[in-house]
Amino acid sequence: MNRVFINATSAKKGGALTILNSYCSAKKNDNDNFYIIFSPLKPNEPPLNCRWIKYETKGFFSLMFNIFLSWFYCQWHRCDKIISFSNVNTIFHVNKKVTYFHNVLILNPKSFKYKVLNFILHYFRNDSELFIFQTPYVKKMFAKTFGNLYSYEICWPGFCPVLPSQFDALKVSRLKLSGNNKVLVPICNIEEKHKNFDLVVSLASANPDIQFNVTCAELVLDIYPNIIFIGELTRHDFIEAIRQSDCVLITSTLETVCLPIFEAIQLNIPALVFKSDYLLGIYEVFGELNGVFQFDSVDNFFDRFVSATKYEFDHKKCKKYLIGNWDF
Image (cartoon, rainbow, N blue to C red; front, side, top):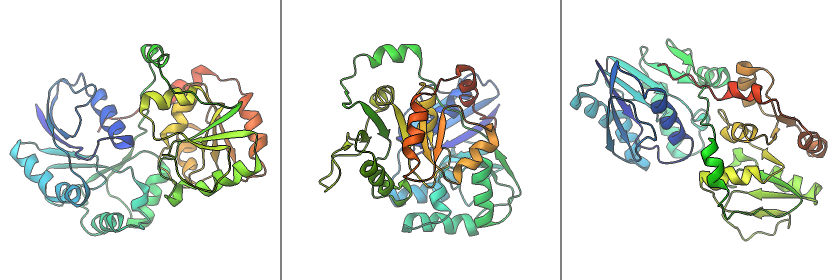
């Protein structure tokens, strides 16, 4: 039986936690491997053969753990394979190294943290290291920044479906969104430039009859009354917010997969997405996206909004987005 070390010490919420849970769920019936999992939270569906160790890292210590300490614990637990869900891997030798890359901000870094990660990927990658990318677009961007890769795979992550039992639980949610035309805007930090909040402001100005509900803490801003800050939501309330909305609005200019798009369309809620290059990678995987409506300017947003709210979903087409490839 092979022993695999899983480094997910930063996977406490958001996309990183979703990736860990999806991977572990895919391995829940694996009889061929034993997994040592380091993470802040226990996976929802851990592998059949595993040992979970509660371990959380933050800030600079996360970097030190990823490139140095993960190797030590890998050796300590007699593992011959290490899978890092932290975008970078240990710089020391391991028989098999797999790095799951899922943060495109590293490719064009603005902050010191991302500049350091960029430096490590530039100068400490091993030719035998297997990189996993979610779409062809992310792989192309990575190769453009760091040069050609010797070993990589494109693995669509899929996403966790909302189960019938969860629909029953949603009925007790206290979340209530007001307004006749409600658009949910999943932006938790409006200061992040790639989230393109300025476009939300422009859309609100041009469409006063539409209410834009932003998943950000309430801010004291001289802003339009049809922009409502509803706070950062739990997954439970976020799913309910999608269900109460006429559509989900994605204004971001830079993403890998953008999970809220797929969370929306599996609930039969259309997604209005600002035209950006990252969508090309998703189209390469699936072609046409069922329930996704692109817009490229403030002027054509309203027409696309009307088309989206009249859209009739084909449930069979949505199923293919659920299935992820975790065979690495």
